[in-house]
Length: 146
Image 1 (cartoon, helix red, strand yellow):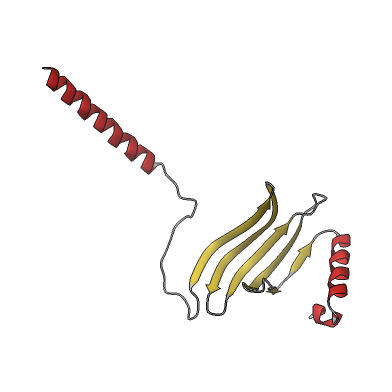
Image 2 (image 1 turned 135 degrees about the vertical axis):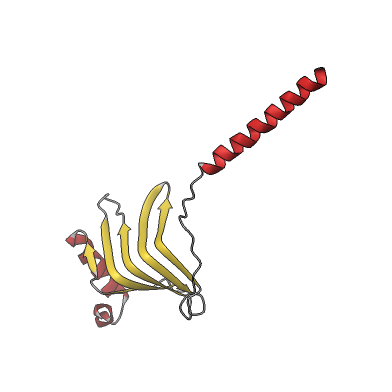
């Protein structure tokens, strides 16, 4: 009789564990979203839709990059982005943003080239400040206006 009770308790415990596992697993949602495997264009190693990348320092978000699509070419060490939106925080708390139809990031040099409906939204003083620094550091200021 005692062995039947032990068996019943053991079966109940195993059933509870299995039920709990199923409930936990079925309620799990991945933050990655749907993953689809498709044939990629020539030269593209990885393609990510709804791409989002951010950088934090001391718990404060310094910048955030979003793109409709990111295509990584490891051979050329570049990342091509479509519908790019970059938001950057400033020390005074007033953010500025840059958006464009597309952009190319050189992963090695970290140079970013934007093209197509490029918009910079921010304080005029920020733009003057950045342009002054750029012109001081570059012996050929005309190269910055291309």
